[in-house]
Image (cartoon, rainbow, N blue to C red; front, side, top):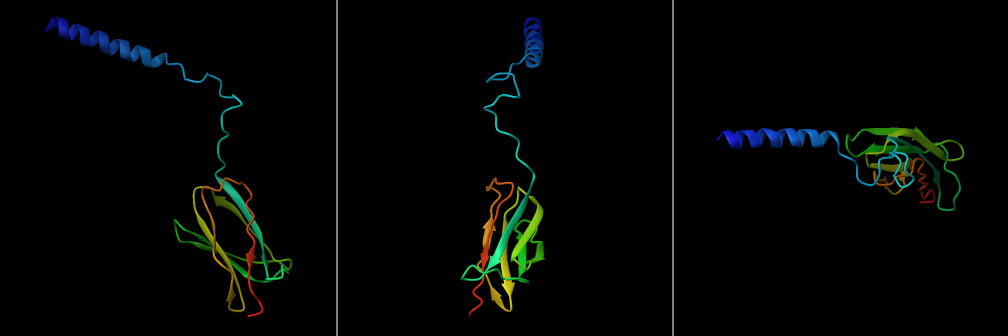
Length: 129
């Protein structure tokens, strides 16, 4: 029994010492050119609301829905049809669409797997219906 207890203590001591001297696999430099850069936690979504002939639709309301919280943000498109939503989480999917005078664009999705920092999504509304 004494022999077993002594060997167990030696084993515990060896494991605790080896944990302090582990060398990371693949090299020890964190500035290695092969390492991926850390992912940004926010992004800027921009785009334009256009009609079927690519003319800007001013004053359209652009809706942005966070699919995790279901919170909705809105933006009124500028005279040139452009809109922007800054500071969006990169860990969330968003649904976006535009509406004007009872007409609505198709719903598009900005996926959390889209790793662009500045995605651009154009929305089209058929104003001739």
